[in-house]
Length: 290
Image (cartoon, rainbow, N blue to C red; front, side, top):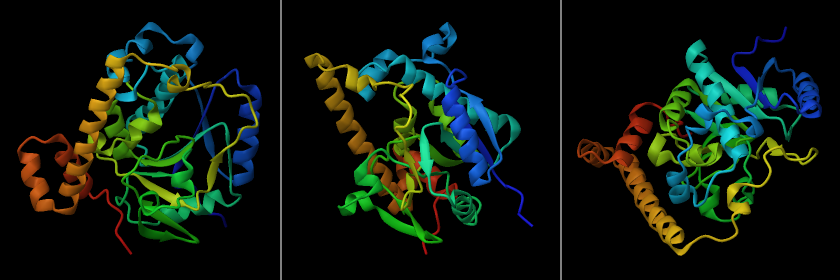
């Protein structure tokens, strides 16, 4: 007898994307999942209160350019799932976008991940748009192997993952993302990557069981960075300064993470990235190495 599904599956899809929805319904059925289709926020119909959450100044400084309406809408769509998780106290969710393909045994793969200690991780990414992450050739891209999941392994990264098409997320991470997202300033996948701000350490499962599929015309369109070909010197300099600040915070995060006694001291001194490292460590969000 098949075991009941112990996690919830959410598929993000625009109401007007009829073909995509039908494709995902068939895919979900083939995989054996019970899933809820979440109507995505439409970038063509952003309401004033939705647009008000976007912080243009921070976007240009942190993301490097203005976000597109579709990027904002995509972000809000993912946030709606996090809100639902908090409202319904959903412990674990598998979040899927409607432009994916995946291995036929995705359900047992996910179930194997869930056999890890209950509070050992916050987010595990199942897909990445970066080849240096999905198929790394350099140690920095490989990361640290921390747990075996059947024929796959989970790796802890210190680099960005990029890609929000498929990931597992715990209730604690949903809360952290909602807290971080009072003001939207970059795409959802890049916000997930900013562990020194949200305390969510990047984990990936390899070989990656999900990948982006170009079988339908993109609803997101080009990202803001692709549309904005040039930037004023002032914007470029501010972006470079922000990257320097981010690099420093990353180093402080991992120093605090590796040396908890020092991390605790830095946290008491009011250093945010050290505090995030302590939350990641002492909040039991770290996969137990095997």
